[in-house]
Length: 345
Image 1 (cartoon, rainbow, N blue to C red):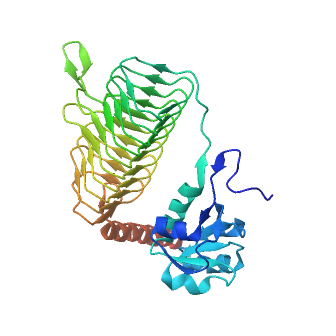
Image 2: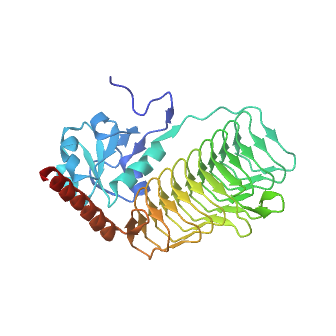
Image 3: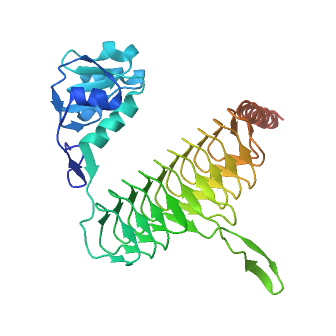
């Protein structure tokens, strides 16, 4: 059934943008079309109309572009020839990133209306902070302008949150210093005590977790994810790192810039991760491991030792991807041969 995109019940559509504005915003080149022509929304190619802008990054979807009713499209130089004559062309190296920037300009999620909140008199909120119903802000907390705290969010004593951030419903932030433009989604917990325990005279006892969490600018922390504060040193998440839902970051972990963690990843204590690393879903990293910049960890991998920069690893225990795939292929082939031999006998 046809419907508006994005659904206006959940997303607010902002003022239209001209193609000239979007070209400047995204760093793309307006190859065909009038700069003053405006679009009102983004849309996937199969739902786009004359007032929409889409994108094509995968050559296999060139047919979808040819059949699309989009008024404008972000494409690479190589794909520009596939854009129908009725459609304006904006050329960029990363069409999907251009589309993302256009979507942020044209649409925004509808937010809870402002309501009653509990803000300690010693908290410092800049003008333009928005508080939904049931928010709690503790003593000494500082929150920058343009940050929105959703219903039920709890900001602990002394927490600092920068400007233009977002804290989702029922998220909890404590013992943390948060940069600008950080998004913390529903149910996430930042700054809770990490898993520290030791043997005591009467059994296992908790070890005090006396560190902090440092979240740098532009980070996203997904719904129901947990980032533990350090035991002594800080837990650090570098600029522009993106963490999916249901991810665990343990105490004293240091993560570089522009890393990506898919859902159910688990990073044990005191792991050091370089810039630009990628983790597939359910990847698990043992404690005190160092992962070099640009490394890629396959889904469900179990990493037990250091990984050099730029390498791809998979399997459990994890090893270089080519070795893992060769071994897996050998095991499969050997099992098939033995199965066939058994049937013959």
